[in-house]
Image 1 (spheres, rainbow, N blue to C red):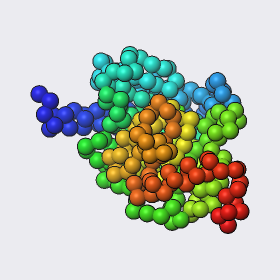
Image 2 (cartoon, rainbow, N blue to C red):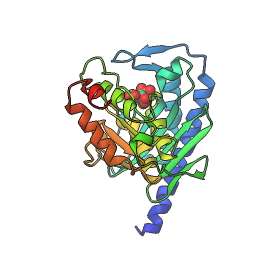
Image 3 (tube, rainbow, N blue to C red):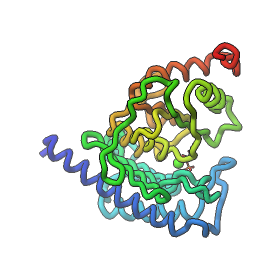
Image 4 (cartoon, protein in one colour):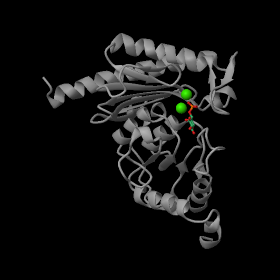
Length: 282
Ligand code: IPD
Ligand code: CA
Ligand code: CA
């Protein structure tokens, strides 16, 4: 009953539902674009929620419940349904990049990931502004609009283009990623801050970007993108290359070739005096 063949078929079925749900959420995001009536700050300054987040989440929940009523769900806006340690846990971000969306900066996505026994295994990320559906599953591979994708070949940080982000608690903690951002900007071809973690990961998966790091994230920001990057041949760990833990909120995702160098530089810049790298590295 549990032959690898059957299990791959099952995973492929989960992937198809995830893709359908992401596309359906994308329709909501397009319909609400530029017409928001409510933009509300949640617990933290700058952490916004709109009717687009809520309506897109409702559409995703309906599709997942219809198909997999027995699975657990963790959804950004409506919370937890079922056991978080269940064999099947869907992690949903109905609108990743809400700040962009609320300002009508067209860079946001719906992100839907499935953790199987705690491991991000299936992901679908739909960016309705560029009409790009990124999808992938461990053991199956990764696609953008159904065409196969893989990570880049860049093997030196000096030749790389990276991406990162800044968590909503950045004003409350010295662990705010500011030194890391400036230092890595100094030693690479650039560091983007695009404002949607799921698309950052999708772009690493398809080779537009070579690496991504960030802290302060939630499982719904990460689940889909982690599955897609790994399915596209990339590497995901903690900053220090120890195993990735989705509950830590911290991620280092690369094409694999840059992984050790980026990890070393991240650890280096967090140990030295702020800005001392500016003199020593020239
Ligand atoms: C945010 C975005 C952003 C990242 C934040 C996330 P949201 O998600 O992914 O890029 O830097 O940490 O919280 O709030 O737009 O769903
Ligand atoms: Ca998010
Ligand atoms: Ca969100």
